[in-house]
Length: 354
Image (cartoon, rainbow, N blue to C red; front, top):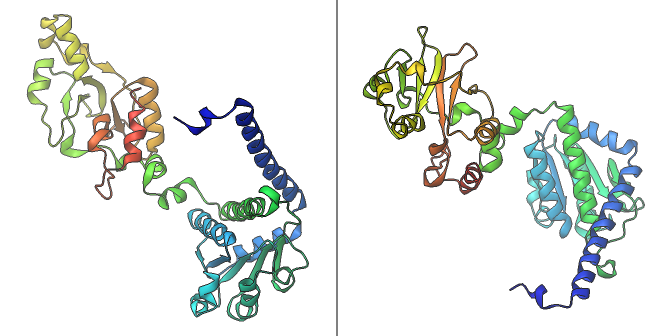
């Protein structure tokens, strides 16, 4: 049982009220900082955009955690970056700085000892030094080649002691820099997909061609064949799929006949249809998708229409593959690149049949 269930209701409501105050305080701070942005933001964007090397981001304490998150956002949106440990930098790691690199230093006070001590050597080693700080009179703001000064911030923590709102602001400013740079570079969904091959996000951004069955894995037959002939002729390798794709005279997709269709014939005792052309009972013009479409689109089609197989065809109707739900759920869910089972995919596809 949750501890909260044993507390007085008024106390629980007070906790919720306080939590809302924290969130609103940080949201209001972001509104204020957004209004304070000025030409220094544009100048910093130009420096970062024209950086011929990589962007190093550093900070001390909680600012170091923020710096690492900003580095991740930079890298995933097309801006090459790395984290510089401020303490280690003072003891030899400054050797990783290339003359073409730009260094971004984060410090709310702008007076953190390690950050201040790094300023002079960094200005000699790097192409540019940028500060992100709340203190316009700090040594960081005054010594940096350009500074993004967000102004005074009231921490949302009790007695304003623990870094909280300042971390939210610094991280959000890092996001703003990263996303503006991504727009300047015309960073696309295809670019994003290349940098996110794994996990649920990587799966949804992957192309259908990466997950479809193809070649000898497909079950194919002519639409003029009888149902009996279809199941006598159709051959498959590997895991069996529940659908036969039927071809017209030009070898293009004409229809689909599934195991469910076959089961319905048995249920209706329609034995005479087993020797009828499959074209009489197949699903004509079935839903299809192209090989370059995203898996997110394919899954949306399968979920909305409650289908288990989705033919993959070129624009002219030529069959190039099939998506089968049995390949994408349960213990057989694997990453096509690594062959490893991905739990996030299992959870995603378990929702399809819900």
